[in-house]
Image (cartoon, rainbow over all chains, first blue to last red; front, side):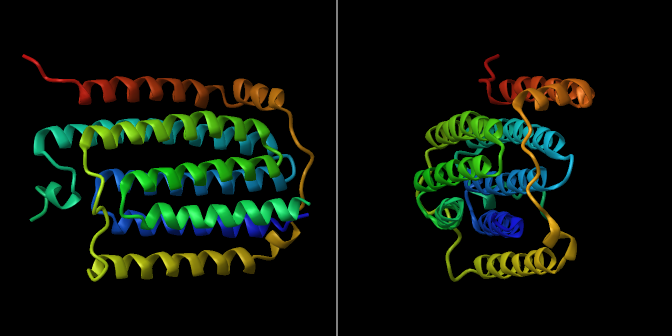
Length: 102
Length: 163
């Protein structure tokens, strides 16, 4: 039996890689990729608890399914925004999108 | 046996996650993400959630990777996608990510309740479906509305604005 805390640590590592990518990417699509990593870590966490909490299997997996669907919807809208930014500005570097900054 | 599978999948997962976050070339990064998603699907199977593994491969690996590749193709910037290594952004990002990782590990390995987690009997796909459609019906319907809104929103955002 594999210690569930190993799964949780793995999910934590995935999440932290996602945060590193999120903060260090200049490209908007690179940021979206890192958000994908973080959402994946969340799903891994949910599945681990679905597997190991008493009576929580159906609820945990349903929660993970909803999370997956939501992440896909978010990626779709995010990519639409990126395509729009590319069309109006010609490039998708994040530093070019700082019009709201003082 | 499952320990070996877990070790192999976990190793591939860690390497792929680092590859996704650190590769300069964006297309390579997308393929590292595909590797991450597939090894996560393998871990779902180990966790007794084969339905989730199937949905992960169909939805994420099939759908999201394709979307990302289309996005990269439409926006045409594939090189030099990380801030320069000397910039303070990368150092700050590394410090923040590793601090969070240490904090999470301290709470994972320090919580006594987590030491008593044991694998529970697996649940069938039919049971998940029955659960979603009976106890989480409102969430299910709200999710449908949200997906519709996301679809319409994406189409409106990305269409050509011909007068």
